[in-house]
Image 1 (cartoon, rainbow, N blue to C red):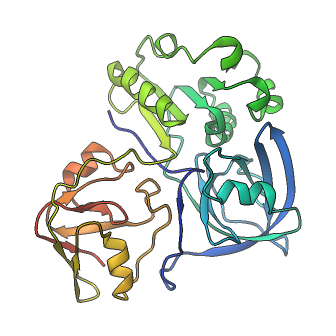
Image 2 (cartoon, rainbow, N blue to C red; image 1 turned 90 degrees about the vertical axis):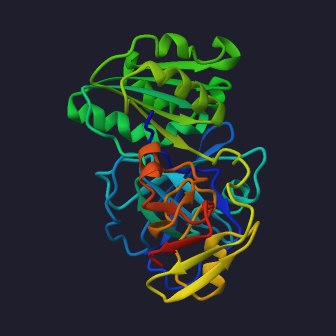
Length: 335
């Protein structure tokens, strides 16, 4: 099964990448902060001078560079045609490492925040019909997809599960779609009935899913009977990786920089490169967002990301240097 995978709100890193890595950054103002469900706030961001913001499409996300030094990724959940405002929804994570707590408790209307992006690793591909499955805050990237599917004239249905109705965001907006949206609050209805939702494989249909890891795994298993390339998922966090294929140190030849690095056990290519002064760009540090994707010119890769498809991994011509390693003694990278 091929799946498009990106990170979302749970992705984080504890320090910023080296300067000069080439990624554009905006300084935006928080012009609105509204609670839309228990534990969920929506922020509206605009440029201080009111200028148009970069274009985006459903499924895109941005990085918020927060005042406490953390970076978090959030899906854009507004209207792409509204080019002066970006909207994001932020869940207060029960195991927050400081990101969602900062957004909820510190960031206020009138504040400015640094924003990178947008990027879209979870695009809405063309199909005759869509099945959308969302769990909790996973509804945020799917929300603009519904309007886009409408504009394309495609058939679609959203199955949206949450702990309870008061914890499920955007219910007022979703009500406008009528019976094409099925709400499944767990305290009343139990878990999403994925066996029924994905019971009958259908050609011409794409399945989009975003939510907690347990939901993604369950949908992935049930979608195995569907036509190849049916499933598109967005992953908040990388799965716990297996032991590295190679425990010994390995060399990384940075072809563009003319530098050869030695990456030891427990070290990451991105950190060793940065310390050597090699310009690298990265964001989530968890192998989910695709920012650090690097071309592999030679050598075998131990892929440890949640971003590349099986076919892309098998090709061996790219890797995520924030988590993946060498499967042999030497890699040559386009760095």
